[in-house]
Amino acid sequence: MLVRFRDGPEPPPPGMLQPGFEIRVMHATARIADSVELVSDGCGPGPGFAGFSLSLQFSAVPEADRSLDALAAGGTVQMPMDKTFWSPRFSMVTDRFGLGWMITVVAGSPK
Image (cartoon, rainbow, N blue to C red; front, side):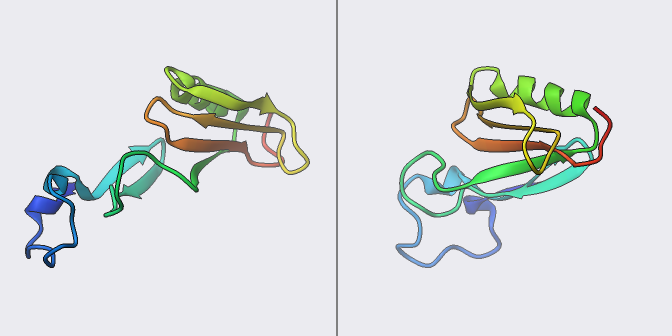
């Protein structure tokens, strides 16, 4: 599902959106493995993502490793996949769009 600001059933209040913002995403869904994520461009000024990361949890190491490889393509790994006190494998990566991700293998999962 994808709804842009210009496609809403009612126009936004005057001054709520910057010029050109009507083509940005108001609401969308994205499927990641067995999870459905809800996303939006929001209404803030400027491009980019700051102050948050999305988190993915996996029950098996190979799934986590594949996700890290896919997100790191064109991006930057901040913390390589490694053991932590809360997880047998954890990593942090910024994807090619500048969005931060945390990848966790649930404790007690097969290695």
